[in-house]
Amino acid sequence: MRREFHFVFGLRPQREPFHLMHWLALESCRRTQSPDAIHLHLRHEPHGPWWDRIAPHLTLHRVGDAPRGFDRARYDETGEGRFIAKHGWDYAHEADFVRLEILHARGGAYADMDTLFVERYPDAFVLADRLVVVEDGRVVQTGTPAEVASRPVTAYVARLVGLNLYRGQAADGVVTLAGGARLVGAHHDYGPVLVAFRPSSVVLHRRRPDSSARNTWAARVVSLEQQGDTVRVALAGPLDAAADVTPLAVAELGLEPGVEVWAALKATETAVYPA
Figure (cartoon, rainbow, N blue to C red):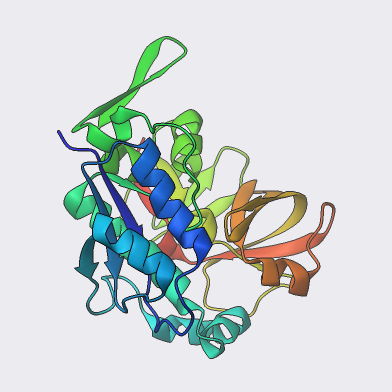
């Protein structure tokens, strides 16, 4: 079994030299994780003295066309999406799709380029072919790391893998949750189901959005927490949820605890599976 780590970088042309912060991410991984390999997946190769120092320790992989499921045309559907596309920031979203393909195909562990490793990462998620999750003394889920990460079955597992998770009853493409809230999903399930979606799939607005998103609800901001290059926004409402937004969105929307917002979620961004 090999300890392998994956990073994604350089999906857009590199006009500036490779930054010290990015060197620290890769070098701290090299020094603390005892990696068998550090894989850097890129489209445009970096340059500069910090790159020259770390490059010999990396295995480079060229990223080709846009990954499956990533469609730049969808940025035209919302004002925030058009703003992101106009400034060329869609590469950060594309990286999310790239890393999922990498982990599904190769396994190992993924880290962002602003990660600073301070202690050895547990072997389970790096080496394991299968995981067993124990909660309150009993086994609640087993599966490959990819299966557990994409289809959590309890709130505890969902928190571990960073997804929103709900239980409900499915019928005719709609899931009715315990509290009465409803979620439209791209599915054909009936009966007890679980619904999961990524916080990054939730789009926030100050007014009720006029968009193609099938799921919209009013919510109140409970808290904000910086997480790398995004901000995790905790929402309370008919559907309590977490949303990941950019610092720019926080400023433009005036987000702070107590602010009323509207949340939007596309049906295609949900994963619905039997409970």
